[in-house]
Every structure is written in C-alpha cells, then in structure tokens.
Image 1 (cartoon, rainbow, N blue to C red):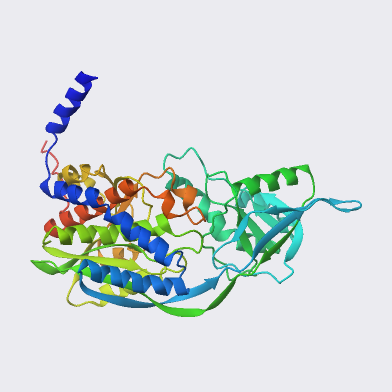
Image 2 (cartoon, rainbow, N blue to C red):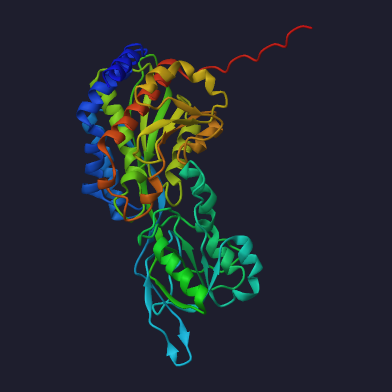
Length: 463
C-alpha cells in the first residue's frame, strides 16, 4: 500500500498546475456555494412550471441572487409563456368478466405536459398495447374507440442515458397524435426512465394539427409492467381521468446579470440554465443544478477578484420545458444588438452529477487541447465535438456563436428527471460544486482567449 501511495503522490506532483483552476477549486470546494444556492431554490421556491405563481417567484428569486452576488447590469428579459395546469390524475383498470367486471386496480400515472384533459367522468375503453409506432401501424384496425398503451422501453445498452432518452422520447412527444390518427380516444406512455418504481415521469408532448387532440399520460415502470401482464392475460378496460388544461399565456421573464469584461466588454460569453421546471418534485437536477452552476460560477469568479477580459453573462432562461420562449427572446435580443456579439455560450441542463466534460458545436475539438489542463482539475477535460450545447442556447447557433454544454456523468439522471424524485436530497454537494467550477473555468478560458481559431488545413505534400 505504501508503494502505491508513493507512486500516486509522484504522479500528482508531476501534474501540470493551472493556478486559476487551483484558486477556483480551493474556494469552491471549501464553501460549496452551489448547494446553498440550489437549496434556496428548491426550498424557498420549489417546482416552478412556466406561467405558475412559483415561476413568477423564481424570477424574483433569481434577480435577488444576482444582486447578492454583486453582478453588473442585473435585469429581466421579458417573454410570454404558456400556462398549463395539471389537475387530478387517476387511471383505473380491470378485466371484464361474463358476470360483470373483475377487481379494479390503480396505475401510477401523470399527465404529460400540454395534454388536454378528460371529461369529469373520464375516458373509458379497451386497452391496445403497442411497442412502437410501427407496431401501432400494424394494429391500426384495432385502435378506433380504444386507449392505446405505448409500452416502449429505454434501451439499456446505450452507455449514455441521454442517447437512450433520445431514442425513446419520441413516444412521449408524439404518442397522442399517432394514436388519434387511427381513432383512439386516449393514450398512455411508458415513462422515459430506467428506474423501476411507481413514480411516473412527466414531460412535454405535442399535437399534430391534422388529428383530434386526445388526453395522454405517462405510466410508471412498475405500473406499466402490471398493465402489460394484465393485457397478456386477456381483454383489459381502463378509465382515465385527467383534470389538466391550458390557460391563457402569462407574462414572464428570463433573468440576466454579468461581470463586464475589462478589455472586450462587447464580446459576450453566455452561461446559463433554465429557471423553470416541471411541477413534480423540486426541479433540483432539472434544472436547478444548471441554475446553481451558473450563479456559483460567477460568485466564485467575482469573490476571487478575477477580472475577465470579455463579459461573462449569466442568463437564467424561462420556459425551456414547454415552449422555449426565453431562449427565443434572448436570441432576438442578441440578434438585434448593434453593440455586442455573443461569442460563445455554455449551458448546463444535464443534472448536478460529477462533470466529465463539454459537448460543443465546434467540429475540431483539438483546438481546445490547451485548456484541458485546467479543466482536468475538475475531471471535466473531455470535449465532444460536432454537437450542441443545449436547447436554450441552440438558437444562438444562427449568430455563429460557439456552443458548449456541460456533460455530467449520466447514469442516474433519468431516475429523477421530470418526476417527484427530482429533489434536493438526490443531489450531492461535491458533485454539484465540481460542475459549477468546470463551467467557471471554461467561461474564463473563453473570456480571456476568445474561441480558438480553427487549425489551417494541411497542404498536400508535393509529389
């Protein structure tokens, strides 16, 4: 053991030093400010769906946080957001018998965001189970007047759970209209998670204008398995009651504050996450973590007295979950500006787990190699090129803004995502802080150096 420790000590002593990263690490990890920020958001505000009183409270909270840090030019960027409310959620199923109906059992469900509701008595019908859109097409003649249950699982063989999510989320998004196309009266969707419990996961859905709007709800994994087993044994009938509805749009805002650059203040590095959340849980990982990463990054930079050459601007975007209107309003502001340029943007919207690196819109990530030493201090030195930064900064791509998105370890994220499990108690203070410090270090690299120029193409050798 002694020889192992000695070897480890030798390796660490030979690791290149980045003084800025060391300063960030020393202050951040001793103070764990990101967790304090997140704790305040989760406990003082809670879940904060766009258009709700809690979302309005979150805007005031974010503004107060920025003033407390001492950021420059703190202000609100208005946007108008949808206002969808949930209401009751009840699903009961049974097996019909010659003498009536068998015992009734409940399913753990939640309405998908932006779904229409049902009549007070609910919608009742036989259940048709499908595993894919192709399977639905094959059973098209059996769907009319019935309730379609999309029992499509996330693929556990993907290393990244975000890849598995991308493969499965289309069923949540499009199930209602796909079923309505063939005359279904309602739809159920297996929750987009791999956690086997009775907690359903909500999320946005959308309607195709070509078909009737029918109610749709997500089913927990254990309930989905119970329903599947009952269907395999024979005919199953189900009553679905949803009290959700869409109310008139509400005025809201994203929250903006910054540290003004000392040499090129007109060149802006945006960092941010989304302030809204779904109305389940506390919105801790999604995206309270991104909000705390953003605010903590600027707090640490500010209190250390670091003076970035370019402006680092925090944007707490409103309405990522069910509309993206905060992202649109910020893009419109940036596009119209005659005095500044959105040089780069960093988004955190993948949870508060230990950081691993950053995805980026840059194709040649080798131009960022010089920055890996500093980012390695937080184990966040991997760059994944040719991708995107996140939904809220994606509109800035049209302005030739370089996009970056924090990539944390992903294994557990969808255990909590969009569910009542997304709570402060499921966030680790150390992991959360490391993410904030990684965002801070990358923001400082960009602020002091700009976006590195692409490497010149190699000239072919003369023959």
